[in-house]
Image (cartoon, rainbow, N blue to C red; front, side, top):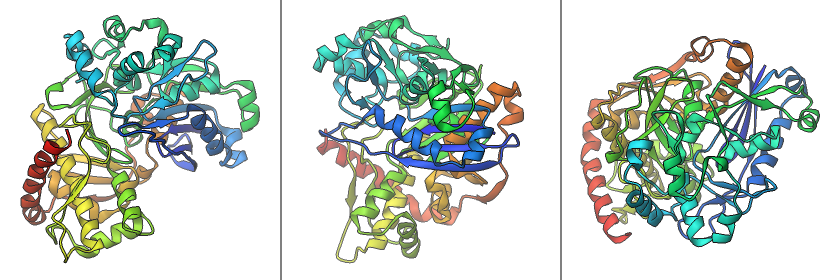
Length: 482
């Protein structure tokens, strides 16, 4: 058995997988996000560790005893600043925090080679601008910082005592030379740091340490090896067999991601496309990233006093796609691809006396789909062919949403058994590779297909005018939210 632990934004999930890839058990422990000021998004790193313990201890003790290796996945970009005693100096600044927009501009001006080295624009979500913000606004904290870790890697430190990271997660910091797969001294110097502040780098299947004796005892397992793991998107991709050139995935979690594997480093920062290392040696990937996806469903359900996502999806299906003039712009936390706009915020447009909760629910599903279509356009502009995407994440449970997405994106969507498990499955697979020495092709196989949804040209035609209005609404909204 192999254990995958995914340090997400809303929860920590633990998944146990058998050697044949079967998901044997899973358990989650919830997390909360603090938003003390506009644009801010933070979490207490200690909460990740406590939730990891709750998630693992929620699994059957008999299964825990059979675990032979652990892999880690996690939310990317979060800045966890540690002092000389390895304790956090402040709350972690998360991936969807937008406070460092001014520092992004300053970084690009100070280091003209930034895009060539990192393959990406400087965006507030990335880690380096966050440290530039701390340097400017919290100089005492910056001066006391001795190490910077990503969320899953802080959990690794608590579990193993080792400071380590993997290349797929590190690629999202803006401190990595993504093409060369190593820390960039140039980019570290641009934020007043050196390689001494950084964890050691490993490929995803490499072993980074072993479980501490006290943790192993409390979890009722041996002191098993812990693999480097992956950032959440790369781990999710491995979980559904997205390994090679042109294979793709649509993740509908808190954020929304379209992920396409590439055999070479192919950046396109001009359209805010992300180019990162994949979790396997010698592989990379491109992504379009949308900061709010399934989180829009959760938010709108709560705002409309709907009991939960299942009921919200049912209301949207009742109203039907393209059934009303209502528009929803899904920018609860700003946007990345293709706008790189931390200031934009969500809005309903076109509400009238005839608007109902069901029609507003339909507009939310359509709005997220339209935002993803903007991202697909950016990927296609970069020369990436996208004809089929495997769907993972909580949003994969709605076939009605799938029909809208397939039609708007003009891609075939494939739903896989176990696809809703998400990044924890990929983390467990990396642990299996680390422990057994098996190849990625043997372990990271594509799960069986449970359903597929082809684009509906008639539905796409009905939604096309709304998508055109959506684009114009973004421009108008952007003009008043700068």
